[in-house]
Length: 166
Image (tube, rainbow, N blue to C red; front, side, top):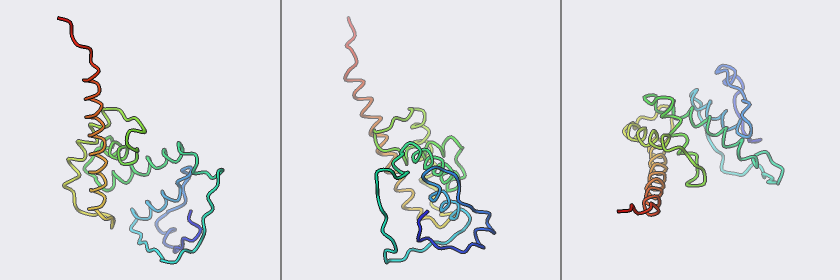
């Protein structure tokens, strides 16, 4: 957790919020839970700490970090877009977190994400104080990246298809 964060303990107790056990991303999970519970946030302009980056820090375990972020994003997508199925929310979370072609996703997951995007792009109502236009723009950008990747893969497959004899 950010060592300079401040909050009202009573509010956390009233909402039954606590620091979870997601490896490397428990703080992110807590802030998302706070948002979903109606919390309000503010940032102070002055830097209040210096963060030391080192080779042994926990966030170097990207597999654990990615798994935790995926869990949190699935929860967010389900809450932001209640009209989606659990599978559609998970698919949107997957394309929003995965980086370009660095990580493979199943074609079925991509198709679910593309279909879910068609549904959510019309849902402009913020439910938790989120910047809905920014959320929708990010999802649209990720869909575009993955649609381009699928088109490129299909073109590459067609270019390498052996010519039929005859």
